[in-house]
Image (tube, rainbow, N blue to C red):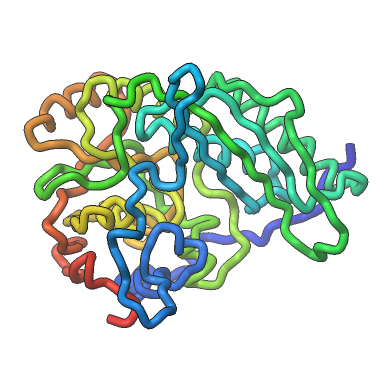
Length: 345
């Protein structure tokens, strides 16, 4: 098998200034088309924004249905183009881990995955390298998470007329919902609920929307990722949901922590008041897309029980802050109210 010859330009977070205008970053990222699915700010019409019709799907982009046997099922689709030409195995493992983490956050049990590679010419040595690495990534991730992989592990879609389009892998994941009464949705439920982060924060902004859209740096390594940590999170979330301790749960994904919190607050019009980690760069803390992190909401009455269980599971976690009536505050600085935040204000 011919190995790939692509090399990625080395990037270090030290290239970015530490002191930056966080509010400017936020409002610039609101115009990022890749974040449009998780915010309501890209409305180019003259009509007022209708909050009731935006981001009100309790399971975000995950569709749910009942099989003929009455079993509730969930399905979602995820895509990734970062670094398939550089490290297709790890890139694919990251994509599968994201899909799994999204399912486990609301209490579904991932069952099976199918995949398709787009813009891959398998007659080309580099296309063969990508296909081989993606196959290994799928097989390893499915084994780690105990998920079935379709017999035809990867389907291909390639047309030379597409021109120079980045190779992309898309996976569709199906999950069963063992108990719909135990589902945990992504939206904040009420003012005063505590917000916790499960997992570690890192000085990492690699392959993030913040780095690529705001700083216009398109070449960087994959974000921090450890598939064994993802597997551990799977087990932890299962126990937390079964215990009934969570009021909401969100995987940290596109846009980083800030947009994850924004997505949680939008359906109910609730805000958040959080404190950043003094040992982590503010931009990385808020906008980095390192893997292995989940944001959960906990009723104040259940916080002690939550802390005890998390401590017994020996998984890193820390308090971020709490849910507000609508104001967004970071380190005591106000960013306004969630229903008033637009790129024009």
